[in-house]
Length: 380
Ligand SMILES: Cc1cc2nc3c(=O)[nH]c(=O)nc-3n(C[C@H](O)[C@H](O)[C@H](O)COP(=O)(O)OP(=O)(O)OC[C@H]3O[C@@H](n4cnc5c(N)ncnc54)[C@H](O)[C@@H]3O)c2cc1C
Image (cartoon, rainbow, N blue to C red; front, top):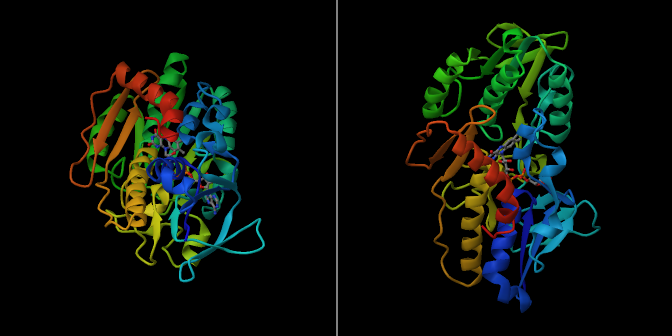
C-alpha cells in the first residue's frame, strides 16, 4: 500500500521538507511505495526576508519570488490549491479545487503566519508595514517622500515573524535618513508591548544601548489599542503617540482551519517542542511559524525543523523508531544599519549572545539571502 504524505504550505519549511523527503525516500517514491504532495495556495514560493530591504529601495519584491515547481524535486507532486478542511480522526483533508476529499497517512502543516491588522481599529487605514509585499512597496513610496516629522515603528502584537526585523528597520531607517542628511528632521520612536525592546531579554539588553546611541526613542509596555489615521496611535496603557508616518508590525495569526481541526488556538498548532508532533492528533506534524514551540518565527527555525520532521517520517515509513529531535536551534543575522549587522545563534538550552556589529556580518546576511534559493532546494 502506498504511504501518502501531504505537506501543506510551500514556504520555507514545506519546501525544504519536500526536498528532504525526496532525498531520503527517493527509491520508495520511484517504486510507488510512497507519494509526497506539497500543496501551496500560490504558484510562487515567497522569500519574505527580502521585504525588509524594499522600503529602502535596495531590493524589489520580485527578488523574493520563484516558481515553486522549479525549487522542488521532480519526484514530489506540487499541487497549487488551498487546503480548506482537515479531519484528523478520518486522516482526510479537502482541497478548495477538488470535489472529493483525499486521505493521508502523514500530514505536515507548514502554513506560516497570516497578518491580522483588522483586529486593531484604524491600523489598516493609518499605518504602513513591510510584512507583506504590497505593504513594503507602499512604504517605499511613502519613505521616499518623507523628509521630516515623527516616524513611529510599533510592534503591535507578538508572536510575529522574525522578531529581529523591527529592530533592524529602525536601525536601518536611522542610517538611511542620516546618509541623506535628514536625520535631524526625523524623530524615530520604537514601541514594544512588554517592558523591554525585544522578547528575548539578552537581545533586548544588547539592543537598548544601541537605540539610545542612535537617538531612537523607546516606548515599552505599549500595547496598541487603536489608531486614529489622522496621526495618533493609542495604547491600552493610555499613552497617545502622535505620528506623521506609522510603520507597524501587525498582529499575526495562523490559518483558521487549524483551530477548526482542534489542533491549537489562533491558528498555531500545539506540538511537542522536540518531536514537532501535534499534541491533539496522530500522524500530524507542524513546523515553522505555525508550530507553537516558543522559538522565534524564523526561516532558519523552519529549515532546521524540516530536517527533523523529514528524518522522523522517513524512519516511521521504514518501520524504525523516529529518534530525530529539534533542539530549538535558531540562527539570525540582525542588521544594525545600512552596512553593518550582528549575528545570534541559540537553542532551548543556550541563550543568544549577539556578536559585535560588523560590515562582514552585513555582507554575510546579504550572501545568505542570495544563497537561500539553493537552501530551499536542499543543496546547502
Ligand atoms: C520582513 C521579514 C523579514 C524576515 N527576515 C527573516 C530573516 O532575516 N531570517 C529568518 O530566519 N526569518 C526571517 N523572516 C521570517 C520568515 O520569513 C518566516 O519565519 C518563514 O517564512 C516561515 O516559514 P514557514 O514555512 O513556516 O511559512 P511561510 O514561508 O510563510 O510559508 C507558508 C506557506 O503556506 C501557504 N499556505 C497557508 N495556508 C495554506 C493552505 N490552507 N493551503 C495551502 N497553502 C497554504 C502560504 O501561502 C505560504 O506559501 C522574515 C519575515 C519577514 C516578514
